[in-house]
Amino acid sequence: MKTLKRKWARAVTILMVISIAFAVLPVLMYDVLDADSLVWGILGVTGATVGLIAMFVVRCVFLKCPSCGKGLARPYWKAGESHEQFCAKCGRPFIYDDEEDASKD
Image (tube, rainbow, N blue to C red):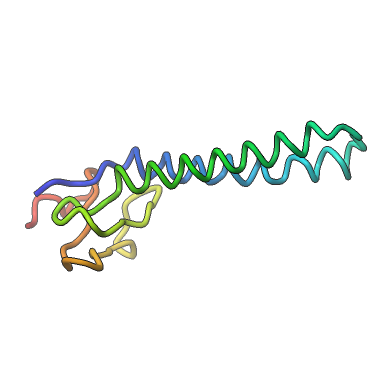
């Protein structure tokens, strides 16, 4: 059985953090540093939007169900028993490449 790659789950998490950082950037520049340039607002909105789109694309392309190709796995940074999840479409478990249960089918 094919497994999902943990590196893509981590990439989704990193892209989410980058998007949040870009969303907070204009607030920091205007309120904390008193920068009066509109460039910071444009940079923040553009960066957050690009980050969210990239996150969505990576999740839809690399974290879909290996069995049916329709369900999407939630990204987790590392393996854990509490992270067990199943495809909503076919019911098969999502297994990442670093999990010990990968040998089970």
